[in-house]
Length: 525
Image (cartoon, rainbow, N blue to C red; front, side, top):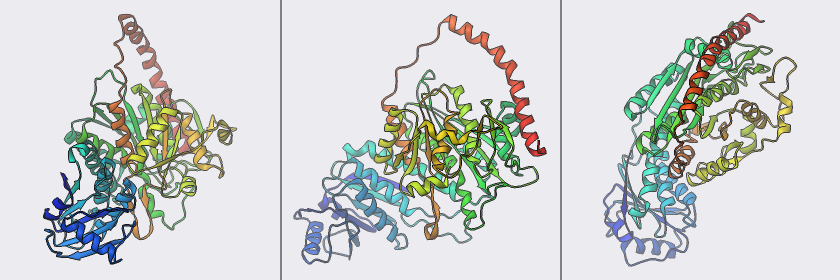
């Protein structure tokens, strides 16, 4: 979809050619002398239209207006959230109305956040999934012109919203693909193609490389499936190499049967959406390629299926993670945390300034927050505030949840360092406490998107969340970058080189321990 930002008052909007013109009218609207003002004022005076949220009125070929179809849409107080709702509703209603060029005229006092909201809403409402349909419906709306009082003042937000919309759409498309197509191998191929086109680095590790690295917990989850695992590493460098990156980690369970702790049959098809975290990382990197912010970002995606078979890991198995911590598996349907914990340990090698993992992790978070806000768990006040603020600006909100030490008590095990579940009470919190054990020294945040990554029912489909939140957060970090870290002196270089042999000696032992753990799980030891 193509977007354009223009400076348009209502008189200018009346002369803007399009298949349809949407005029957002806020409460307290004061009419001018132009044709659109007269139309809106007459409709309000006649009580056939109100500027309240959800109210609309369509007119066909009104006098002195270039577009044949005009829709007055109430947007209440004109806030970004109201603008988003109004544009989304109208754009959705026009999907089959032969509208190719849509003009959206924002309220006179609307600012940059309203522009951002209008772009996001138009892109979201006009999206059509076509990949696996024999006779797909094409996307009707091809271009959207956003008219505001001062285009120059809103340009940065418009550019950011357009870039985020591109990433959100990619995340939705990947999430909506069926699990026999969106395999771990396919995700790795998509990442490589995107990296080549976007000018950043991509490395995809297979089973041998993952075993050599020592990711025993990740390997245990993957061992029950015929589909080979993939560990995807993306590197976007928009700043000096000396600047510490932000690391984003996405859970990539491309289908989750629950494993031996198998899920109920109803709605199990929706477990193709369990790679929503991985899709959001790929979508975020798609946006980074377009926006090119001045910061460094690393993306990590552990991708595999969780399937029941003769090789599958079982309740009671003990696996060894990359960190060296042992984990007692009490429920194989709590697999997401088992692949994320190894990715969190892997992230430490990048010496990150912050680490954020994103996962469709727990049904408990859906019970707590529904589908409105993602759950946010965070070890650092500054990071938590930055993510919450980014979510509000992007209309992709999250809500901070607790991480009290007492919640970790239920994860104690008689047979390993930690159990992978802690019972039903506070399930989203105990899952986060499990992950916190594997987070390194850098500020860490966990986004549980189980309630927000997709919708069920008649509107079933991926939402692309929280790409909007992540992109906005990263753009904010690019504007507030820390000073570059000075290069180490010769003494530090010598110390670093001296440490390498020891690390190399330890690596084979760790890999062997990991292989033994994974094999032992399959043999029942």
